[in-house]
Image (cartoon, rainbow, N blue to C red):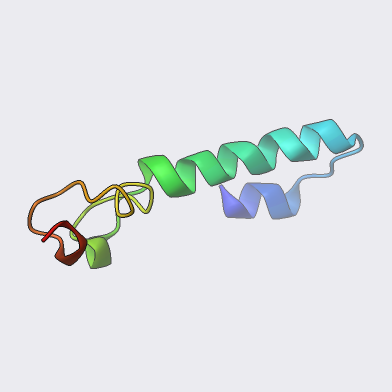
Length: 56
């Protein structure tokens, strides 16, 4: 998705803002990271996942 944002031309600020919001949503809520014990970045502050150090 990051490459799509960089390659697209956005003529209206609202179109760019919507694409950035979609990217942030995907990055923080739907993209699991192995370094976070397969949690999403949004899950870590809420300490979801019992085996994650933040959940201890």
